[in-house]
Amino acid sequence: MMMRRSSHRSRTPYGAPLAAACGAALLLSGCAAGPAQSSTQSSASPSQGPQAAEPTELRAPKPRLAYTYAGGVGVLDAATLEPAGDVALEGYNRINPAGDNRHILVAAGDSFRILDAGTWTERHGDHGHSYAAQPALTEHAFGASKPGHVVRHAGRTVLFSDGSGKVESFESAALGALAEDGLPKTATYTAPEAHHGVAVELEDGKLLVTVGNENARNAVALLGPAASSGGDASSGTAGLGRKEILRSQDCPGVHGEAVAGESTVTFGCEDGMVVFKEGKFSKISSPDPYGRMGNQAGSPVSPVVLGDYKVDKDAVLERPTRISLVNTGSKALKLVDLGTSYSFRSLGRGPSGEALVLGTDGALHILNPLTGATVSTVPVVPAWREPEVWQDPRPTLYVQGSTAYVTEPATRKLHAVDLKAGKVVRTATLAHTPDELTGVTG
Image 1 (cartoon, rainbow, N blue to C red):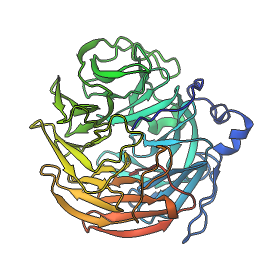
Image 2 (cartoon, helix red, strand yellow; image 1 turned 120 degrees about the vertical axis):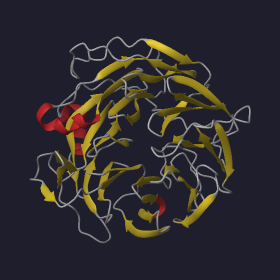
Image 3 (cartoon, rainbow, N blue to C red; image 1 turned 90 degrees about the vertical axis):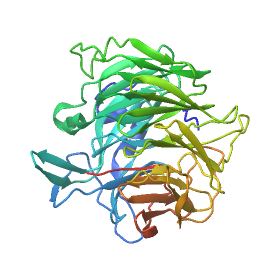
Image 4 (cartoon, one colour; image 1 turned 180 degrees about the vertical axis):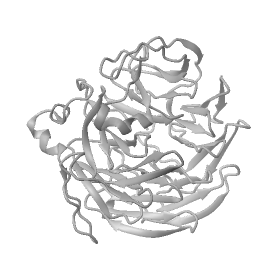
């Protein structure tokens, strides 16, 4: 699924004040947090900003969820599904964890906005202190032209701007000092041509980045570490000097990435998958001339990458029933027919590496990633049909620990599935129709 924005917007300066990042007065009201509603709990009090109230110390970390809706982002307690806060924000917004277990990056307009989910843990040697506060949209933003993919790996967060080809990376944990220090220092690289791309920074500082333009994407390049220049996020000078080391030219329509195990990185192609492992590229080809694996889900405890699998290049919207399981260790590809279709928001991984697929039959299919065998099937929502417009809400899967969360936009419901017990253990009615879903662990 290609996730492109329809218009080009100008860049928002780094660390711009809230009013500047939101733009005209019409958007100012959209940046203030509003109340959240629930069928079982009264609305949460509106947040007035990141310093609206003193945080409460907790006995343990408190994970939270965030979901987008038409006009904002709702925040929930992950254990109870009760509302924790609500942030109004106009436009079509997309969300990703920032990588520090507290903040969420909101791709909105011409920037990656930073939402404080209001839950975090401060480490002190062998122990930590956990806190909770009202969620709030911060004043901080990374400027971006058509903000696209966000990737977290090896303690670094990487942002890709489709409209400019800019790749910006930073230490994920550094976001914790936003209130005192502002945005963290970043390393910046700009691709030769803008395209709908993705990049992954490796543990040794090297960068894997897609290569292409607005018309075609067909390669993945390995670049050397960024040269230290003493720059900072506001100057945009950090991260100079990346030089290409290696390239795989064998990935037509390259889209998406995943990490298998600790360090193997994969990229989806229209005829298979490119694998980067131990400093080298290799290709695992599809059995069909056109066999696209454009969306993938990896696991830190499994060598297998779960991917979609599409074979109709000319389809306006193909509704596949087969998924791909790519073993990056043995280089084996297994195709599994689920007997039901799914969407690009249907793929996930369990705590032990289980392959999870939310089918249009309304069930969560749990598979053994090595054999492709179905371990269990958990009914969650009524049968549904994938909408033709990819921005339209549809049942969406998000996994946090041993719990799989599934949205049901038609009824504004959210379901929590205990993967160990294999059943739905909690359901809540949301204040808004949910679209994208993500979370932080606190």
